[in-house]
Amino acid sequence: MSSGIQVNEKCFETFKDLKESKYKFVIYKINEASTEVVVDSTSADDATDADGKPIARKSDDYEEFTSRLPAKAGRFAVYDFEYEVEGGKRNKILFFAWAPDTAGVRSKMLYASTKTALRTKLVGVATDIQATDGDSLSHEEILSKLTTQF
Image (cartoon, rainbow, N blue to C red; front, side, top):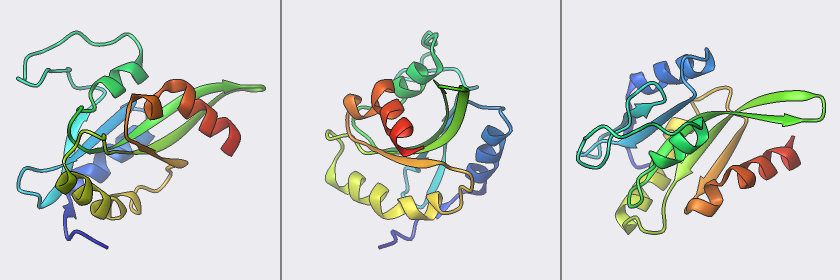
């Protein structure tokens, strides 16, 4: 079922930039009016707290990415995940549907019904990750999914 929420063109432009290695990650959100999906932040943006005040960046890109996902609200994201296997390093672009257990029911429903509108147009994503808590976002959990899938 579709929510009718549109995807802002800037979402696709930033995804293209991620594929060209300009960003390590892009986080998307549904705007306040619940009318479109917009870019929330990228790895190039300065991190801020809930009040908009700058906070120190994490030294690890994946840790920085997960720290920017809100505890009580849904988000979509793409992340250029780098990992090592026998034979060398690999990169896979991952699509995240973040719906924390602490998010409201309406928010979860909006994100669930809007996911397809964004995801189907992001050509080049290797796999989708549905995450609801920190454990499902752990680096080890993601790596396990990738190494068994590919």
